[in-house]
Image 1 (cartoon, helix red, strand yellow):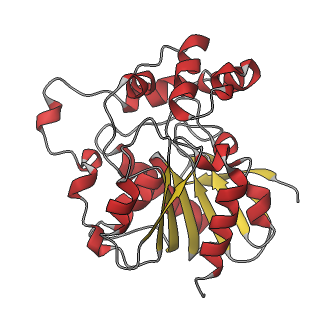
Image 2: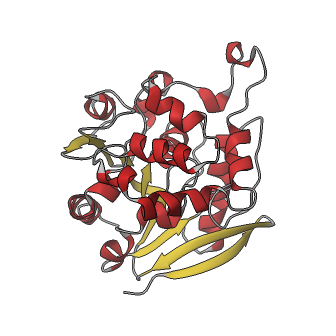
Length: 279
């Protein structure tokens, strides 16, 4: 099954995306670490899902081959609106969604909002939604200095298996993505906070515990990596228990990106979950 790289203009913003397969649409939203992209986040999943679905994996604003822009007032809201408009541009009015890390948080933020924008039929939340653990791995994600050692620390934070940070080619691949024109600047700028801003009420910065999960009305699967270095054990069950009909699954031998470390397990899980939801 071929994966096609395409480009769309969404409200005047260049938007890169990957597409494969046919049928009911599945939209995949990648994480928000430096160097992230649709390809790096979902390259081991697209073909497996495309055997049954039309799979769309956009590069979100600031990442991959999409426009390098930042909204300092409501960055997350900007990306949610952009994905919603992207869906309209590519002819998707209802879809299964899966998001990893930042992509998962975007899904939860929208689904619990007063006026959801994304055309979500079902959603799979992969390692996004619990309260982040403040440790050296989180610091590696926040304070990336655009160097190979810095990217190796990010890769170490994301994965359980020590082979990933030891793989020079893989680290360099993520590094090259992180230093593409405008990429480092866009992700770094999104982390800026004016002195004293932590005391203000910023919609995009609401902690997980304050989201109104009872508002979620779509079938929801919450996936936790058993060896995630960035989220506390048990967060997925705690979240799923607040969603009517929510289901939590823990993936063994996986960190913050189970869809990369354990793709066969996650692909089977997603295919089963999506297939149970009728159009």
